[in-house]
Length: 177
Image: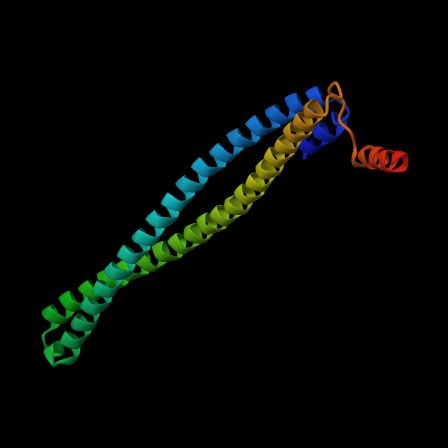
């Protein structure tokens, strides 16, 4: 919030406020740009994790189907052939290892996806806050420009009248009438 502290500290001098304000706007615009870039990268990572997870689920489904088929071979009466049973059991063991590996990898992907999603949502909130600050500074800048324009129009030599001063002036003019 150092931007706001600088603006408050410099509020007595319009030229100083304008300079600080321009620097604050430039800093915010730079920060917004960086956060948007990081957010794009995070969203790409998130999409990549989702795609990889879908592929892992598909592969795991295919392996589970193969495992089911091998188990059916063992139960269909081919158990009397020891060599065949041993080959089928070896394939089942391989498939079980692959399924276990894919499930572990899927857990890792889920963890990575949750971290990326969390970071992404955190950055979105931060970006929203930066944009609100930028909007506030731009509104403040426009208000300062409007005050200067009014002051120049009223020929007050650059002195900006407050609402109370304008009210007092209107009262005096009404008393004269």
